[in-house]
Image (cartoon, rainbow, N blue to C red; front, side, top):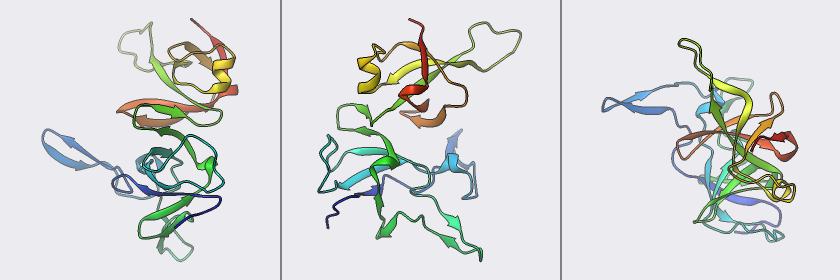
Length: 186
């Protein structure tokens, strides 16, 4: 099976990641399909488009948009698979529906996307918790940022409300675009 324009993928694991283990017991933390934070975003590449000229190959892991594997309810309340669903747990996706890929060696950002690790508050008062506002460390950069001198490991500021949360390697990262990076702090 080949497609001239679409990547063919399948989810890695369950469609939803809504279970955690706590004190040796499995606990369900979300029992609805509406919350996008619990949708699986990891996919395995089954086929790359015949017109594709990039570095992604069959077997690579992609980080995809949360709606790719999401279940939703139609107007009559019936559960439906996403419009990306094809058959037998295979999905079609456009190149703009994924942001990061793992080639077997390392994670690589796609296009103008980058991933920032938020920084915990440095000056905490009493029991205050949280993150530095609009500040983080570039974990996965891209060619655009590299040309501008922004390197992975740099502490950066980013524009307000540009971050979109992902969990990758058990670490919270924010996905954003290269033009959301405002300043390099180190």
